[in-house]
Image (cartoon, rainbow, N blue to C red; front, top):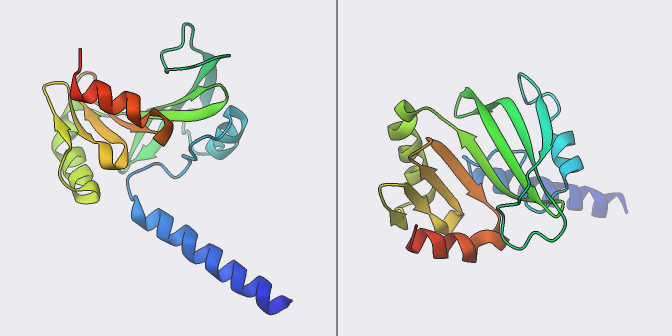
Length: 163
């Protein structure tokens, strides 16, 4: 029995390491579909200036049936700097994360996105998107977006025809 447990532990450890290596940019606290309580727990000690959970009314996420909240984390470390980061949760499922950056960070951030995800799938005056990995650079305000697979159809439709 010990051998089976040890083997399982080694496999899970390898899978966890592979997951982290496969997406070096996405904040490590992101677990798509996680509840607000789980995200708050994951953020403990990771927001240099604390975090707050606030309702968003009206919701802007598609298909929200009960409620949308946003956990604002002040000082989350992203690409070596403390950033304001917004964890957007619809119907108690994490669906979107916005990381605020500076306009001066554009070249560094876009290069990191290209290094991690390859060629952009969509480019406009508003954004540079990498739909293959559900990520984007937004011009104004300057920020990086990560979104859950469940939002992919709506995001890709908007990215193809932003208005």
